[in-house]
Image (tube, rainbow, N blue to C red):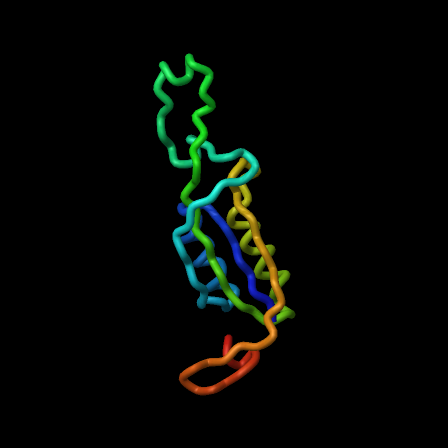
Length: 123
């Protein structure tokens, strides 16, 4: 099994949810998070205006942190590549701030209600 953690734009959560559901993976966790990448925060990400007097001072308009959404799901090994490709297809705009995806192995899973383990606990 693989854990897939995707950091994406908030406005892309709905489309990502629909695409994952169409693949047969309707279950995931979504959390509002704050962060920044190599650009160290960009004001355009959330659509705010930079006052002219700040631009005249040479300020970049950067922000400390940008609001993002973190999606986490666990999938069977055989489906991990397809899920990652789908997340990329929905979220890739070729613009700064498209996000990141992290993939980690999962040793086991347990469904508390039924005591199922392994892939049967996640499907």
